[in-house]
Length: 451
Image 1 (cartoon, rainbow, N blue to C red):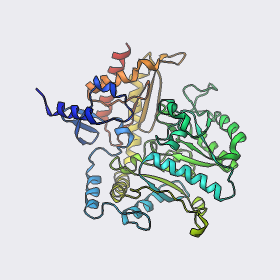
Image 2 (cartoon, rainbow, N blue to C red):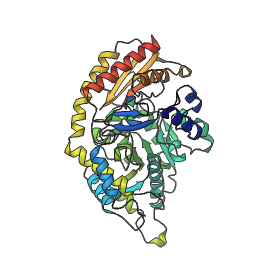
Image 3 (cartoon, one colour):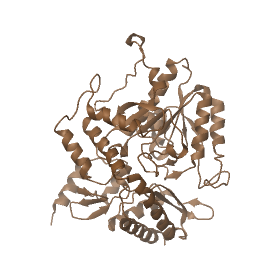
Image 4 (cartoon, rainbow, N blue to C red):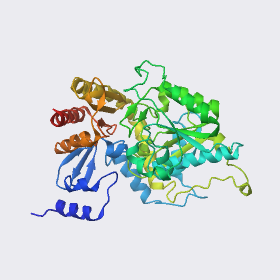
């Protein structure tokens, strides 16, 4: 019998080119057609429930179809859907900036609206370059970034990224980036433990700043969590020392908080763990609760003032996006901040994180192929290795993580892997029953694939 689900799958495969996918895989693992979402759950057309433990690529912050956010967007929809953001504004954009200015690290107070995370990174990079050009340092034309970084898919953002899976084929057209060996706490080259080290790995950055600091305008980093690299977590001490290096060499610190902001690490922003203020912070994903595409590059008055001049001087930041400051997205973003405040979401998530990490360690720490379990906030990652003692990884061609992902789908859990790293990055509203279930399923699937 040919069902509605079958028909939709056929049409999907006929027309859609899905992101970050080898479409040939879809011959075996068909696309799952989702008809609705509620809380941490998604429901397919054929009435199967899936727990969205990866927050639909880390953006769903407060659950699917959150009534408060939905109502805020509906109300805005009947008032103003969009307006040109050059020389025009609207109440929700102003409200959002005012709310965020009171929450962001000190000094971040000028808001440049873009429409996705990659675009925010591009804006930040252009902003930094132009600032130095207009303040007497035209030699500062290069960017620094860490190994294993991920900052998006557009050319500039992809350039500062350091994960070859995404960028290798495009290297002939990418910017020439100064690549710094970043923190790797699981395979620390100094043989230290990141919980009590002094971030000795900052030595690699110090060497690069000495050599190239004078020609560098900015370094782009993911604070504390290199997400696409496998949820690699490092010490706040590294951020403190990097901030000082940037000050010493007049290099901007661009904090990519697209994936780490909004409570993902247990604090509102990952930079809060280190008590530092970047020169530019990029926000997206949780910004609108996963409802609407929107992003921000937030910067300081000092940087803003370098662009503030008579039009004839040609110093304006001529960067624009059609949907900059979209009212629907701003309405969602304002309500997200209201919910975080009213319902103490981040404080409650901190308590949940203790339990989540505890049960993951209890279930996985003694498994022979689990090399590392790392966590920060509700983010938990399990790195699977061929040899626990040598930390030798599995051959990527085996696609161990992908095999586990396919098994977990049978039990209604979305465990989309990062190579051989299985991770959990759920909506902040997840409850203990779901934590127990998804970790049980993960353990069962890891054992089936590897034992």
